[in-house]
Length: 109
Image 1 (tube, one colour):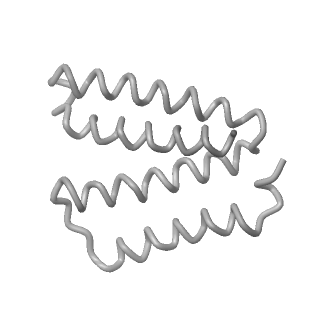
Image 2: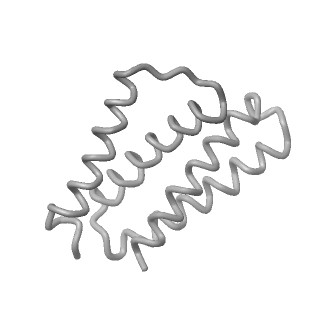
């Protein structure tokens, strides 16, 4: 269950960050509400994972996956330009998350 909660926290954070972009500096009401709700849910679900997943591991996965997903959304949906170095960097982040989950004993509690 904590891994599902962490996944929900990541998805909510990505939704919140996307809404932040769409809010035009928090001037558009609907995306601004989306920011508050999504970030609130993200932090709540992240806090629930910390009962069983070590904080360093949970935060590394949450932030790394969030950064990679929001960059991909920016590129695919919002017209953000990414170069080869950006894609390599995102690949390294994903590789780091995989290493944490598969090879690190600190991920298991």
